[in-house]
Length: 255
Image (cartoon, rainbow, N blue to C red; front, side, top):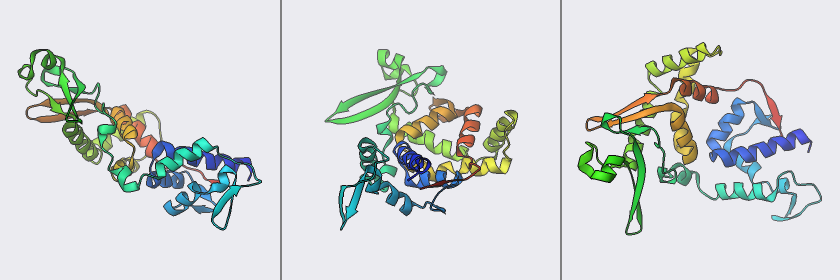
């Protein structure tokens, strides 16, 4: 295997670990024109590539892997990391709770009056309870703030639901497009709408850490009140996300 092909295989292994989603990785590879033997990788082909012991220097005979005579192109540590991700079913990966990323709204969420809310937690009966709270509530009690202690999962789910909906609105699409044009980048308003719309069906397959990164990228602040939630978006973050999701031009072949 030539070095360019080996480098592409290593890149695919590394990106699978980072992304944790076969669906998203296949989509990205297709958009970047990365192929295998002249054909686009589908999910089946990707899983076959990731499970091929030839890449760690093994040869398979009658279903049993043995040390081969060829040189490995990925190390055992990288192979083991991919195995660890693949051992978790796609359904389980998709349904992982945001409890794995406790501070999803850290630095973003504010109570009435503009008071910053901080993540906190407590344990009862061996179960972890997460919430957001202002410092004056911690010092003076729940009556010190109109919203008191807010269950973290509840407010995080509400913010995510609103965020996913907002990305499909004409107002946000137009705002993002104007920001992209101001930066001198070539992207039509329709492309922006299509690109931002791609995030919603992929969201549940993203690792919690990647979900948190996107929230921090897109959200300027979240203001809570007894009446509900108001989300302020970051225009620069919207433009950056659109750039990340935009289909890449050009093609290059994989092994």
